[in-house]
Structure formats: C-alpha cells, structure tokens
Length: 591
DNA sequence: ATAGGGTTAG
Image 1 (cartoon, helix red, strand yellow):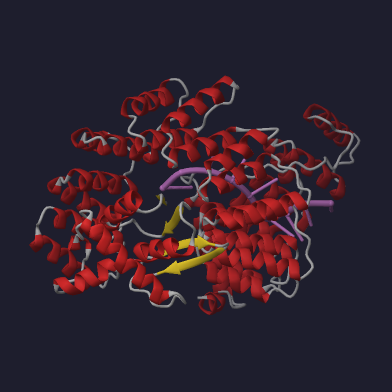
Image 2 (image 1 turned 90 degrees about the vertical axis):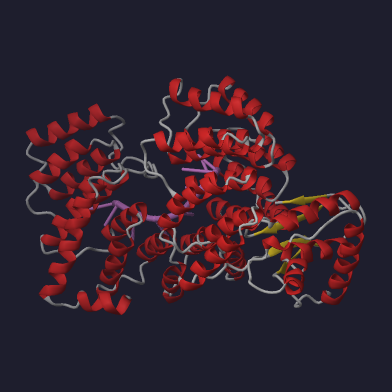
C-alpha cells in the first residue's frame, strides 16, 4: 500500500495534483461529517499581557494604529493569541490580511482551526498552504494527521504518511505519534507498529500512543508488554501512560493485572485525578470487582459525568440495575448533568435487570427533560428491553418507526430476543437486514442457525451452513481464559496444549458423569457441523469454557469463585452445564 | 514562536 501511494506522490506534477485533489475532496466531504470534540489544551498565552479577549483586541488595535502589525512576528503573536481565545473570526481576518506568510504563520492558523474542531476550515487552510507552493512541514503535519484520525479517514491518512516519507519527517516524534494514533483509530495496528519500529528514537509519548494503539485494536496484552519494555528502556512513566495501561488491563479483564497496576500507580505516587480515577473504576468493574470499582469511585476527590457514567455502567453489566438507578439519582442530586452515554449505560442496566418500565421511563426522561436525542444505541437498548421481556412486537414496531439509520447492533438485539423467545419468523426477518449490513460476520450466521436448531428446523440449519461455506465464512475460534495463581490460562475447543491437559480431561469426564446423574442432558444442537452425533458430543464436551472450568476446579481450593472470560457468546449447552456445575460444585461466575 | 499521548457506551 505504502509503495503504491509513494509512486503517486513521486516528485512529479501528477503526484502533486493528485495529492491536492484528494485534499480538496477531503475538505468538501467534511462538510457533512460530524464535528467530534477536540482535546482542549490551553497553554499560557503567548502574550502574557492579554488575560482576556477584549484586552487582546485593544492591543491589536493599538498595533494597527501604530503601524506595527505589518511586522510578521508581531502578527504571528496576535494570531496565535486569537486562536487560543477561540476567536477564529478575528484570527482568520488577520491571517488573510498578511500577504507574505511563513510556515509558522500557516501552522498557527491550521492548529487554531483544528483545536476549535473547525475541521473543514482547517483542511481548507492546509490545502491553500500546499497550493501556495510550500510543502507541509513537521509542525502542520501532526495537526492534519490528527484530523484524519478524528474522521477515521484512513485514505487521507495514508496519503499524508507518504508525504511524511517523501519529505523526510518520519524521524520526527510528533509526526510519528500522530501517524500511529491515526492508524490505531482506523484499526490498522500493523501500520502503527511499523511506524513505531522505524522510529530511531522514541520518547514517552511514542510509547504511550503505541500502548494505547494495541488496546484500541484489541490486543491489550501486547500493550502491557510494551509498557514493561518501555520501563526497561529507562523511560519513566507519567500519569497519561498509566491511564493507557489501566485501559489495557481493563480490556484484558485480568484481576491480577488490575491489582498490580493499581499498586504501581500508588508506588509511583500518582494521585487519582478524574481521568485516572475513572479509568480505574472501569478497570476494576471489567475485571469483575464491583466492590473495588466502587471503592475507587468513593475515593475520588473530583468526579465528572464520565466518572458517574462509568460507575453506572459498572452496575449495569454486573446485573445491578437498581443500584445503577440509585446512583443516577445521586448523580442528579450532585448537580451533574447526564450525557448521551450516561443514558446508554442506564438503559443497558435496566434491560439487563428486567426493569422494563423503569427503562422506558428513563428513555422518555432522557428526551423530555435532558434534551438528549436518542441515537441508534439508545434504540438498541430499548429493543433489548422489550425483547428480553418478550414484547417482540413492540420491539419491532419501535425499529420500524425510528427514523435514524439502523445498524447491525440493533438487528442483533432483535435477533437475540427472538432466540430467547423462539420466534423463528421474526428472526429470519431481522437476519436478512443484519446479514445485509454485515455479510462476513460468522457470529450472525451461527445465531440464526442456533435459532433454527432450537426450533428443530434442520433443513434451515443446513441452509445456513451451506451459505457460510459458499461465502467462505469461517467461524471465529472461541477462546476461554481463566486466571489461576496470577497466571492466565487460555483454552480453545478440544485443546490439549495445557500442561495439565490429562487431568483436566479426567476431571471433565468425572464431572460430566456426575452432572448427567443429576439431570444434565448434553444438547448437541449447538454444534454447527454436519457430523455424526458421537463426534458432535466429543466437540460439545470439550468446548473451551468447559475445559477452563474443569481446570478451575482442579487448580483452586474448594469454595473459590471461578471466573472465566470468553471472546464469544457462551453456547446454550455450556450455559446449562455451568448452571449444573454451580449447583453441584463451587460458585461459578461467568463473564 | 507553532505540533504528538488520557476517562464512560459500542
């Protein structure tokens, strides 16, 4: 890819024209694009005398009257000051007045628009800059690359990357960090890694971005390894890199890691500010401890909407809908205004605790009292709310009546409800829409197949399987993790790679015999393959979650809660199996 | 003189 675009950007006029036209179309296409929030980073004013905008205007006037504004360095300072005060109108007017601009001048203007979230204007100024005959420099490039990140515009990002190469800026840590971040947001971790590997020198920010990139792209383990490597290389962590490490641990779901990271933050003497504290709440909640999450929440000196929402979400996915609602009440009592995400978390909490009426109440309250326009995620929660409680028709009519774009998650929620309540016809309808949106997602086919299987519709099961084969859709391998003695043990289906494999299978066999006596009947409907029943049983009995649980029983003392983590949905048979194990063995908690 | 990294859902 890189080579290809490099050719386009070869030092020919064609390359340059192509580059400009892409920039131009990017600028135009961004008229419709959503303006996401830009980090607010306020630096000290470069003109210390001007504490506020009126002082600045006065100074600007004085300079004009005295004929001093034509001095480029003076104009630069005023321009910068205007952008810091977010008075882009004045800064742009001044910018246009200056005929001979230097690169600093362009940079300040481009950065000013970027900081204010005025991406269209930012792109246009950047385009004019390139057109003026100057090549983008190492100061403007990070700003523009960041715009590509915010718009997830990978094409434009790659083009800029080629520019970086061509102009020899790839050794600049600012440029490289912006590139890595852009690639990570666009989910191409390989390219982010390549930029990182090629850097001759890396600073704290380079490492931070790369750690965050791994987490963003679903590989938190690698991110945490990188953190260790960073420290081995003698780089001293700061709070921001710790936030990234906390996020990685959250995604990993490892309670041991969570505690180690928490301890490390304490040892380093980092105080919990709003962001680090909130990240901690999220980490503990996702690693399975609602109590520790709440402890962090209670211990925070300052909390904002995000902190409250994180704690509400935590109660939600632990099935504590009432607690989530109580906390929401407390949040309002503290004068904190909820945002759209707070409501997603609340609705989610209600649907997972069967609080249908409360959920609907929240859905109205959100719109009527807080003026939050429901987006597709809110609708998905309400569909789930109706769906789980068996109100499939209401779920469907809600979907039919909504006038915003429907996404895969929405249809998946409806199918999920159909699965619970065995509504094959509606499931088919929803599946048509779902597969149209995501024809390559194996999970959707499997869900549909399971619904057919549950209804005994074997012909249709075969049809789904055939469809998958024809389109070369492969099932994503399922994995289950379990943490024992601070070590993560990972199992796949029929896995024999574990050192205690022999004991695990022996334990599983005994367990199965015991549970079958207690009434457990294996349900081979959840095996998708077209094979004979005995083989089906073999596969079913060695599902990764069963192996992990068997190992958990062997490796932990009596009475220890067993906590397993999966990448895919638990199959129906394993669900039943786990319930039996809970009744007859130790407490099993599944996440 | 100007530039890069941080929190909640999905």
